[in-house]
Every structure is written in structure tokens, then in C-alpha cells.
Length: 208
Length: 249
Image 1 (tube, each protein chain N blue to C red):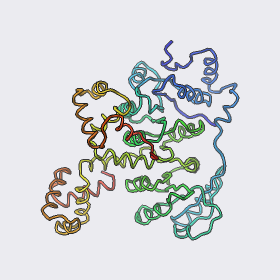
Image 2: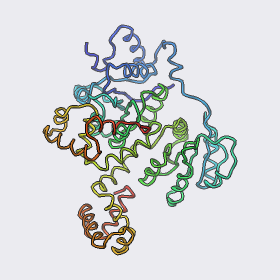
Image 3: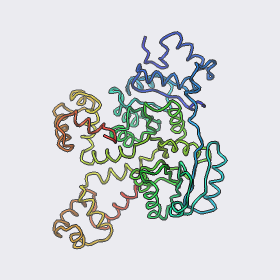
Image 4: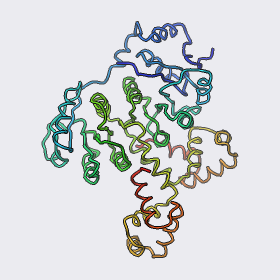
């Protein structure tokens, strides 16, 4: 199988078995892996320091340091960068992130390596790819976010990726009390009573 | 050792060796098993084209049949013809021509072709992506959108990927959804409903009758819609609505 054109940066999940294996496989197939970056700011610092700019960023969707917030930051800072999201499962959150942030591809960690390479090839050639079962997750996400404001959705995405109220407040540059206020609104809208329940509502697969 | 710096993953000597050879562009000795790991999932993909002009449809079918791993079966004028025909085994991918000027026809066709029990993935062939097309694709679980500007090889690759049950779309397909949802966000379901009726040219009395509301309630909702959309009258509201549903502007 031919190599993927262009340099690839892996964002998040560094050191985890799955990203190590991924980098090994990509390199062995002749593709250029430019490096691992813990999160968006590490990548940005490296680029400012003269590191070669990647054509594609592969982002680990479940890593709390990377995940959807890194995707949003990448999209805003580099509108032309191709982004491939690596997900555990097809969930309203991962698919919602893919649609709202104009992600170029979503690949499941359970996919075969050859599928990953095919997806990367499509993405570098200017096509977008989505995994099996994304349609239903997309409709579920739409139903969920229809009742939330943009800010509530940002807070919810961060809360679901495991950040504390304090961390959310720092990330969005708002006060902890404002975060709590938004969370109350979210719980009310989603009809749940805790961030765990909200998280389950957002990350539950289409079958759940 | 900071393994997170680019190219940073050479933490042990065997890794250094592995990556150095690969970095030279041509790995000299692959570990056993990698080739099989990277082997493309093979098997012939059967394909049927439906709709569009006959000459183009049949020419496309014979062109795609010459590609590796693709075999185009008989083509059909319409979904009804396809459903009436007896096929020993259904094609893996159905490529449906979505003519721009006849959206009612292909929307109905997509609905009929994409039953959950169907063994075939549906792919849409069109000149450009539009909001109605993408929405319809999501709603009916369509396997992908193939642009008529694609090369034969790109089309082959896209069809092969769609045949695995996954989806291929033109890059940036989300854009046609974003514009509309940003603008219509903030409208309540009732307001959207009323806006749709206003845009169709119904009067307040008619809308009130249709939705079983009082005319005053309808007026109240319409005023709220005007202020949300930043418009002053029904015509402007209807224009905004047309833009929202088209996904442009």
C-alpha cells in the first residue's frame, strides 16, 4: 500500500499504545510522521520554533488534553489543515465535533490499519470520510444541541471530556460560578441531574 | 528524554533503527506481518448506476468497470426500474444521479433506496454539494457523495470506501449545514414552523387555521421571528428562509 502524501502530526494520546502503533505503521508504510504533540499548545509552540508544518493532524478524540477542544483550536488557527479524528466509538459528541469543526475525517480505533491509511489518503486528496453509523449519531447530536446555546455546548463538551469546573473556567476564560450557572442550564435542558448523566447522554453510542 | 518533541518517538535503539530506514523514504526490511496488516481489503465491488442521462450513465458504468476491483452491473433509468428488475444478488453500491433541477425526484429516490434492510450502500452523484442534499443524506444514512468533477481514480477510491459501509464526502461538506443552522438557531420549533408557512405565502388567518392557533398568537410569533432574523416584513422573512434552507448566502 502506497504512502500517504504530506506530513502527519499526531496530537494527543502520545505514549499510549494506540498512537505509538499508529506512528509505527504510518512510518513503515513510507508516510512522514512529523511528531507527537501532547496538545494544541505544544504543537503551536513547535511550529513557532520552526518545526515543519503538518498537512494532516491526527487528533485523539478521547484524550482530555487534546480531544474536541484541540480540534476547535486547530481549526481556528489553521483553517486549511486537514484534521483526522481518532475515536473510540461513534458517539453524538465525536460526530458533533466532526461536523461543527469541519473535521476532514473520523476513524475508529477499532478499524483495521489498512482502513486508517485509506482514510488518510482520502483526506489528503480532498475528500472527507466518516465511519459506519455516523448518521444516527449526527441526528442525535442535533436533537441534543438544539436545546443548548453555543456557550452551553462548549461547557458541556469540556465537562464531558473530563475537565473540572475550574479547568473549564480557565479554558473558556470565565468564572467558576459562570461555569456552574451554565451547567445548571444544561442539566435542565437535557433533563439530567449530574455531569455523569450528561456525559452518558452525549457519549452514548447510537445503539444505547 | 522528552519523547514528545518532533520527531520524538525514538525512545529505544530498535526504534531508532526502524525509523531511520523509514525516514530515508524506503523501509529496507519490514517486520513480518506488516504487509498483511496494510493489505487493502479486497474483493470485487459490484455497482449499479441509477438515473441521469442514458448515454452518460452507461458510459460511466463501462468506464468504472475497467477499474480494478469494480464491476458495474446493468444500469437503470429510474428507481422503479431497478426495483422491478430481478437481481440475483443486490449490488454492493448504488450510485444515484441527483439531478439539480429535480430535487423532489431524487429525494424520493433516496428514501426508497435506503431502507435499513437493504444490503446496498447508496452513493449520490452530483455536481456540487447543497444543504438539501446533505440533510437528505444524513437522514437516510446515505453512504457518500461523489462529485461529477472527480477523476475516475478518485471515484473508484470513493466507491471502494463506501462499499465498506463507511462514508466519503467532498471535503468541507459541513459548511453547507453550518450557515443555515447558525441563522436558524435561536428560532423555536414553533417559530420555524410559522416561518415556513409565511415563506410559502400563507396569510396569518390561514396559518392560524392550519396550526390551530389564534391569529393574534400567530402575529406574536411572526414579530418574534422578524426580530430574530433582523427583517421587517414577510417578503424579507421569506427570502431569509429560502437562503436558510438552501444553505447559501
